[in-house]
Image (cartoon, rainbow, N blue to C red; front, top):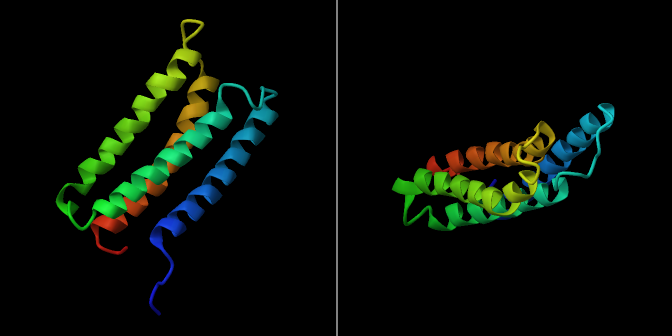
Length: 131
């Protein structure tokens, strides 16, 4: 059977499902530990990571035919972009008291790593011409 579903749509759908599940687990852990649920820009962090992951995947998908030989470097550049966004928009808020605590780190790193895993799986499929 020929796959007629757009790979970008499939990626976006799987990513939102993954992030909803991870967000739910993240909130359950925070609740279990009696910690504030929606502090440390957690909603913004999940949203920004979702949008950046989609932008990065679309760029990889559109550039795969012309730049297949450097697609891995483009993928790494996408990760660099995510960290640049973190340092420009999130870091100043997290570092207001002079240090970044574990909750602040987790609010960025948990969605970042979840997105990174799915992005890496799809980047691998792109590199192996399976998409």
